[in-house]
Length: 139
Image 1: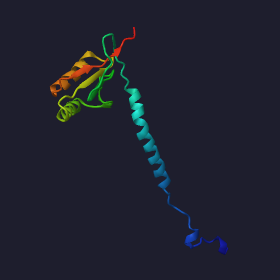
Image 2 (image 1 turned 30 degrees about the vertical axis):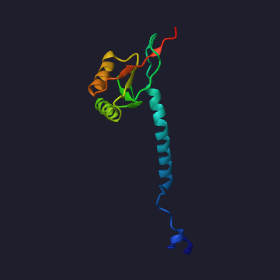
Image 3 (image 1 turned 120 degrees about the horizontal axis):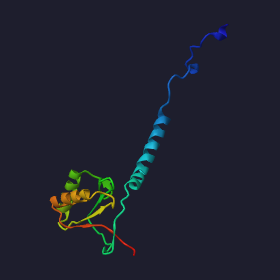
Image 4 (image 1 turned 180 degrees about the horizontal axis):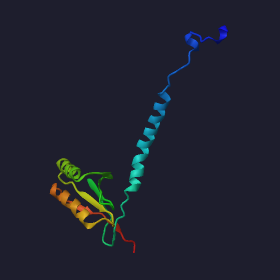
């Protein structure tokens, strides 16, 4: 029964550890995929439907693009921002260019008070040139 005794040879010992390297590789790939797709998904979730007018000219060149979505969330150039953050960004833009202007796009279903609040923040930060973005009614 010499063949039944466990061998003391290291080459035949069972491997008792788990290799985590492939697991880490998979997790990193998933992280990269998430980082690439998250902005696309977030952009679709924050759609803003603009009101239509007959007198709008459709032009809109500006330094700051401020949006207010249906839920009243404020976005600066497509990125969610707090009221204090918006005030700081407006001040920075004015430091870089005294002729800075803003275009405010508000969802047609947002509350009027949300738009007034954004206008007040922009004006209190020192920016006096702003416009309300609308879509031209195709009648």
